[in-house]
Length: 194
Image (tube, rainbow, N blue to C red; front, side):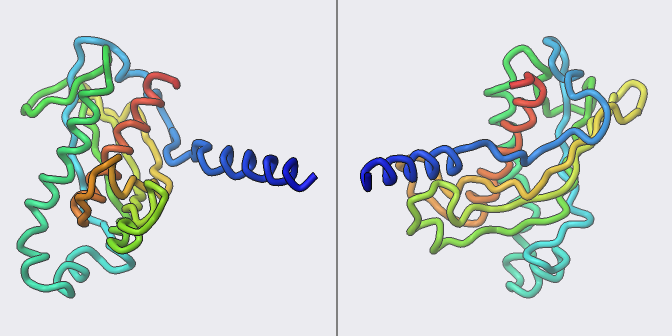
């Protein structure tokens, strides 16, 4: 009897621990506009209203020293590349992200909240998301020809991985980049209706 209860408990833990959480939802419009081959899109991250760990971004960066503030623009380039690369690796026959002045669509990620995660938790956890970065915000998908917003998405406390399998690199940029990578994958799942 004890073995049966233990087996049932393990099944419950395994299924709830690995179930998909709804980190992303469509607020309005049609995400499927990005599911057509031959289209291009530009990605843009908006940090104008970002809070990092409960403080406005500028205040948070200043409180951690001059280097944090100085490195912020470059850190954004590094972390946003995770989104760009994952998108283009996974989109298949959908709209490809390009580095260009013109495209069919513009994807604006408004990052309202960032929790950069915890290095110690990331290093000493059995979970791949332990200590991972959490992001929240909204996404606007804009038709560049008409200037109209064709879809709005809500990012609901998406928690990225803290590391990849057999990867010991762990810092704030890595954790934030992995959260952006997961965001790209989640958007593509909506686009592809998976």
